[in-house]
Amino acid sequence: MSLVVSGLSSPLLYDCHLAVSDGEIVALRGASGSGKSAFLRAVADLDPNEGDVWLDDVPRSAMTGPEWRRRVRYAAAETAWWADRVGEHFRAPYEAAGMAVEVGLSDDCMTWQVARLSTGEKQRLGFLRAVEDSPPVLLLDEPTAALDADAEEAVERLIQRHRSNGTAIVLVTHSDNQADRLADRRLRISNGRLSDDHR
Image (cartoon, rainbow, N blue to C red):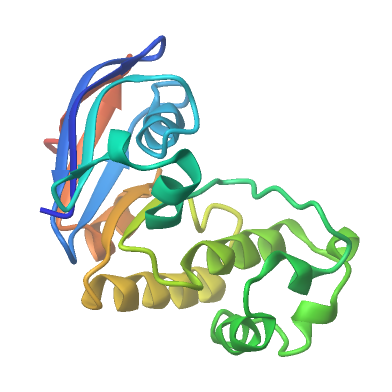
């Protein structure tokens, strides 16, 4: 197993359990406010929580927060930006520009000002920031919610590529069709509790 979550609890979550294997995609569904983002943020240790989380048998408690989040990468639905230019947010802007072309962006996008980005451009670039160094676990919060069909398809191709390279992925999506295309398994969260998503 790549990622194992046992008894994860917080003010918004109740005794959540999950195991995600290398190269597996688990889709997480649920109504707005049900705890989907809270679950991802708790796994990434961004919000206070209790319970045990392991990555390849190494407990989260054995790592610093930044070290854990380098390996268990959370990609928010709305990405934070702190510098004026896009490229300042990437470890390797030149290589990232090549990936940007794959999701329908111009190869000069690393020179763009953040202030000029559309919502869809921010979402694609935020996704690329999350995956550029190929972390072993991806926690993706609605990674295509603001995208048109072509851009959504391009991002899904990259998600599939990371899965084929062994990345364990938890994907929050409101789309049944996207879950059908990508997920090996579906879970539902309701009132902060995880369960199998039976349709």
